[in-house]
Length: 102
Image (cartoon, rainbow, N blue to C red):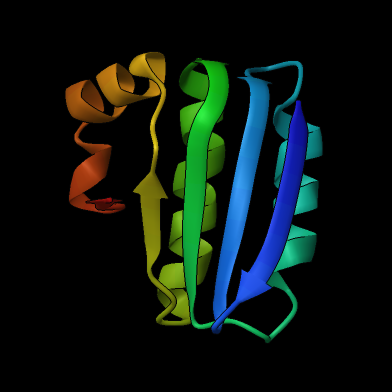
């Protein structure tokens, strides 16, 4: 798993590359928490175009980050979901809390 980020116009863009599962969850959680601790953005966009796999552990990582940011009134959005990610987000209803944007 690779986690890449950049800030542009007060938005933190995060690109998740690879598999978000029980093997990469701890690394991903720690990396995202570090990124999220910097106060230089007011919204987050996860680009999932390169996410090849996500299991329930990965879903938990994203929901946990959503809860942390919700407490700070920072919305999270999803862009470019892979076919796999799109299916998971629709089935689980995650788009209700992290809307898909174009």
